[in-house]
Amino acid sequence: MTETFDIPPRDKAAEGILWLIQSEGLAAGDRLPAERILCERLGVSRTALRGAIAQLTSAHVLESRVGSGTYVCAPKPLSVFQSAGAFSAAVRDAGLVPSARVLSQGFLPAGEALAAKLGVEVGATVLELRRLRMADGVPVAIETTYANSEICPGIESHDFAVESLYEVLKQKYGISIAHSIERISITRVNEWESEILGVEEGEPAFYECGQEWTEQMEPVEYFKSVTLPAHFRFASDEVWDTGAAEVSDAWLRS
Amino acid sequence: MAQIVSSHEQPIYLRIRRKIEERIDRGEYPAGSVLPSENELADEFGTTRLTVRNAMDALVERGCIRRVQGKGAFVSSHNISRTSVPQGGFRKVAEALGMEPSVRLLASGRRKAGAYYGWLFGIPEDDLLYSLRRLNSLDGQPVALENTLIPLSLLPTIEDVDIQVFSLYETYELLGHKVARVQEKLDVLALTAREAGLLHVDAGDVAMVSEGVSYDISGNAIEYARNISRADFAGYTFKF
Image 1 (cartoon, chains in turn yellow, orange):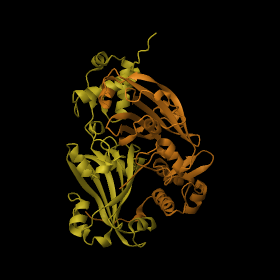
Image 2 (image 1 turned 45 degrees about the horizontal axis):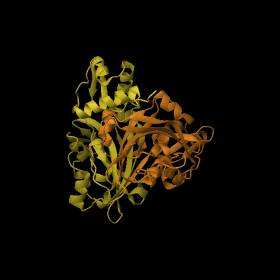
Image 3 (image 1 turned 45 degrees about the vertical axis):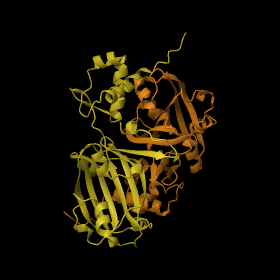
Image 4 (image 1 turned 90 degrees about the horizontal axis):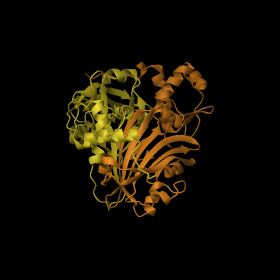
């Protein structure tokens, strides 16, 4: 008997759909062909096809709409760590319009942990800025930023629904971020976040937190965010060998 | 619009969570140590064990704390994070953590690239890929499932290397295709019953998925890998 090296049926179906999206340039909101047609075209059974659709739905590639079929999800903004792009840049790169809403803004005395992160005395005044970040008006993330208000007096007069915090720090206070550390892990959306983000409580999400410093390693800010994986992705493109040939980012952005 | 934010109006479980986070950050609960029991913490904060548990749940999901059946809750915030893609693969990460890695091969075989992976690797769709499915464990505890596809046209002798002895990255280097660049995307999803079973967690639990393509110095894609990590072991740290 000769081995045929066939692709396992469910993988064949999933890869077939991914290839269909890739090769035919299916875009956000496009409906997938009917099951019967897809099965024929991809050469798979209905069981395999349904398994593949479930898998791609959970991976935020497809979405099922009750009673009307399966659709291709909108392109997700991709934050590539090495290109140090802010939220807005990632959203714009995906062809969407970024916006923000200030949920709360005010000052609080730094607790021990926060004081250590910002390099201030315990009890020092710290700016807390909590924003909802959106893409094309759809809630994507809740971001909370803490900054040492001593280095940026009067910063509260800016409207961070429209202004970029980085730009204000840079233009008005001459503070540029040169170093950062970010950690990305998993959380579930809590009750308050679920209301703001418009998803069910307990929905899985990215939890990101990080610290940023100036060139001289002076702490500038500490931030944390809860981001919906259905609308945003984190990525990395790391060159380990400086002699490495350029490669396409077609896969990374797909 | 502006309002004064007071930390005193937070629900008690949030205050306890913040307190525990602070203690971990300050090193009062050092990485690898056992936290006080839920009952002890409940006594300290003057609340119930359930509230303490609630406070700790989010920290468990973020990977700051790891619960071990019968042993308690351990601080893992600093020792589990990894810097971007581990440049030596899973074994290097384990080494850095001071934990014993083990890799179990669940399945391996050859398959056709097909149109999609043909595109990804830049090879004809009838070319063959070597397909591996592995379960990675730390100190005997399963932490990640990894599916890997490798184009045999570039690495024809890959099947002869004992992957229980050499990591795949070491193997690529042995075969003249040292990894020079890695692209990686992260996602979060709920585990299927089968995945959850292999990882010793419950179906529906969340996991972090990392999909990556590794390239050699000439820009050839030499590996596609999809890694599903248990939430309590999933954390990526990026620095610049």
